Image 1: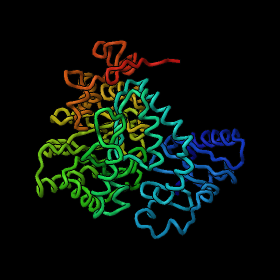
Image 2: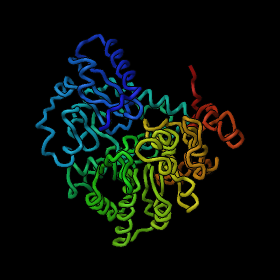
Image 3: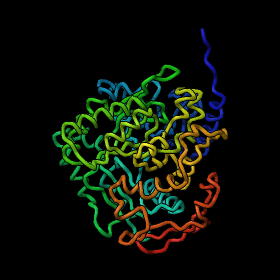
Image 4: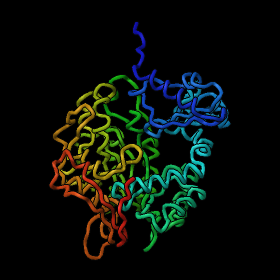
Length: 463
């Protein structure tokens, strides 16, 4: 009979929560925190949060952003009851009332009242302004948010802050093929998506826009939660999750494929990728399309055969290179084992097959710092100082292309963005060193002087 082991970080995590609780003046003020991960911080549940403070509402947002932990006062403050979590299909299987834990589809049971706490106009405005400053300091002149969270009130703040005259970047969005279809069903989905795009259609001079003819879908669960669907499972025996199960994903993908949409699909596990590639192959056989540019988004786990299949199917890869840097050490020890953990994000294999490769941050999953992402892809260094999967390192040139022209290509905007050329928009980043000249391990440290956006110079103002 085994005995439970106390995680060495669990006590420190709870002491920090207790200290944060003590700093709050109002007894009914929410204690909100983000970044928890069991592999770093130990087990967490409702009872542990109640022990921090049995009367204050406490919400812990998981590092993956795909999970919440709530204490008893938080459940009550949100108006949730155990009955509300029952008989709700897949959502009920992805929620644990006793532990106050909600993940993947289970978030649908609590996210609407939670957003009223988390995304107040004051919090959202502060966060948007902070994000703009952060992105500009990292040299970003355009970013894309796939599966955008949209409400009319949120959009008003987006217009005021992201669309402001002094905001030196494009904020672009892709409609959410999960939430919209859940809300209106397949029969009404195309009209609802087009209605969303019409809120801010792409047009010259517009900073804030939805891309036309593009949609975001979701396959399996979050890599940072280790809920991606893996062919050979997990070493500790836990199970992955589907966000949209394969049969339902196929129905949604067919609707948008046949309507001519470019489909961007969140997928993290090699089993999730296998199911997605099966769907793409079936759809292309039913209704052949050239230059469909279906995007494999995140691309955490894969096999060499799957990379070759991506090439045959004409898909693209938008990878998060930080996964290897941030998680290969921990996942080698727990969940995946060394071989699969070090093979995450097979970027060099993608390039060797001639598949277009771009990089993204999925902020806050990784820093939204393009040169840092390029550094991750070039070096694959982990916190322990080792190189994880050295054969999957890419060249500096390939990494710089992945954060510029290849990213623009995945958006279908390579004729406007991504390189400096006659006829393109005058957007570029001004660096204080040549990234090709510095040692590859110093790529992330190249200083950013500022940006040029639509021909206007925007220096980075440093404190």
